[in-house]
Image (spheres, rainbow, N blue to C red):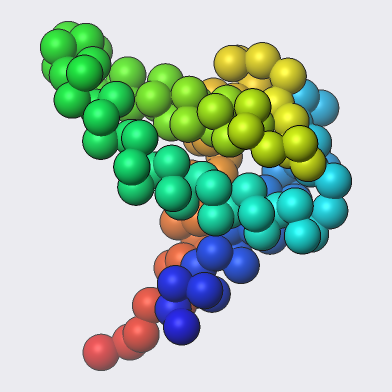
Length: 114
């Protein structure tokens, strides 16, 4: 149940970011939910492969290249889906950074107090 709520919160973050970023667009809430699912699947299957393949440059940049990998994941999602578009890699980078911040804030609301 917690995973479904996290996906819905990610979809809300995608809609909000698409409203404010001029280089990103999403058709509607249904498309945003599909974007959240595709982003989760790409992060699960593609991101580990990209991290391993780019390990030397990630080490040289002290981990900052992971931002570029996240941008590539967002850009791949925009290429795979028709209802979601990111105009350039720079907007994908900004979108991925802001999405990570929003996800941290929104998922922080779900933490149970001990």
